[in-house]
Length: 270
Length: 305
Image 1 (cartoon, rainbow over the protein chains, first blue to last red):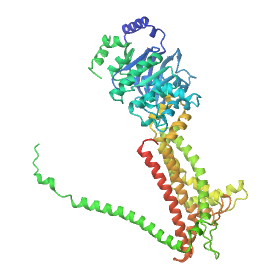
Image 2: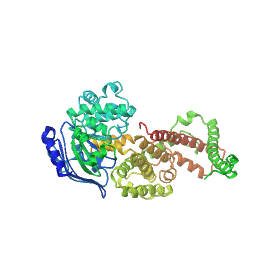
Image 3: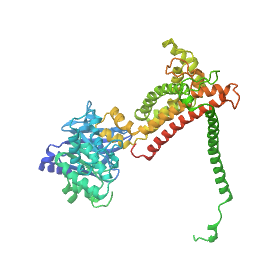
Image 4: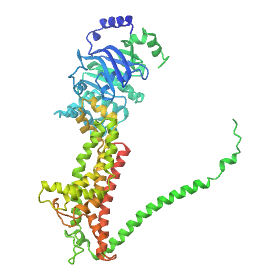
């Protein structure tokens, strides 16, 4: 980002409450796989109870970026990071932070729906709690609430004991969202959640994101710019591991300040 | 470049060599099927011959096995109990060790260590079972006798433990395959839900790999049931309906060895007993193999495990 951009971003921040005290703040985040540096110093805020889209061409580091926000990046062998990621002002990379506890606050939905095949729909929703050794008393309520939030309840309420993999791809993805929501996270990360889905299922997930951002802080990676413009309040454009531009989605899509952003959103590369 | 070949080239017959090879391969396949069929046929004919003289009631309704003595009794349970006892001890040894080893190799060991460990475990499977047999008799049993003073020289315990070591690589290696085959997307999904490593393995990975693990255990049991040398050498030759691991017993396989090596004339009733016992053994291992085949098929179909 140039200095002008930064000033501009900050002035935007000043004008909108959402960025004044962001839920998360990424500061000079760098990430490596082995020797190759895939994120080259990213600094940006994540607004609370808003949705932030990360866009950029394949290989720009957007998936890596989102995986750094709940320390899933380090699950891969040979992967490491530097810099700070603040959640409510606390650095999640500080010594003593338990990534397992962090991931309960910062949930994640993946590119390909990955319901647990040997669990029923009900068990899938409760999987996060079971993984933490919690056996909640009001299980039925919990399952219903999470499935309603994920807009899946009406479709599955009579087949809760069926296997999660018996559902369609779009339903599976909403089941994965319900599974994440059952833990009542504060931030929900979505890594291209619609890329394996057909247009109708995609529309359902997008509607859902509209609802979710009222209650949760949502960060969504997408390679689909229309999707970013539809679901995101803020958009960050990543290119070759660098943050080229960050700002309100309407501004990014109508008057991008960086020529690379403009080239990308008008389809000249990517 | 224009095509200049005349069209009739398209109609040339399949070369002789191709047809020959296909027929030779077919013949090989038929030979192995016919051999199996032949063995089963012989087994059947001799078993039928046996049951013309000895009734099912005498065979399945008795717990004494004394066909080589003057007062003949044919209670197969005396041999089945020996086989079940030694196999159970073997599984009790091999299942926990093999499964935990498999979990370590797949989930904890570095790629480099895994590449060394797995073949190393599989080398155990290459040791001839006669060596295991002597190992059980001359090393394991004396060591055990220091702990259990009234352990007989020939006993089910030592043989069973060593047999467990023998089937350990089967269970470890096949279970590892099953665990390693669990898609990473499920691991990631579980980690992202805030699962610790142990919880993820216990609640997601092992249940997903269950069919494959069960198949590996069944193959292990099948090997233990059919294992001959170890029990013939170290477990004794005393058929008795007992589940006491400290005393000498006799397994179905060991009985067949005893009669086959002896001077029992062909065609006699004593001779036919080994076919009846062999048939029983065959039914056991066949059932186990079908079960593992079924389980592995479920794994390969990849659906709900």
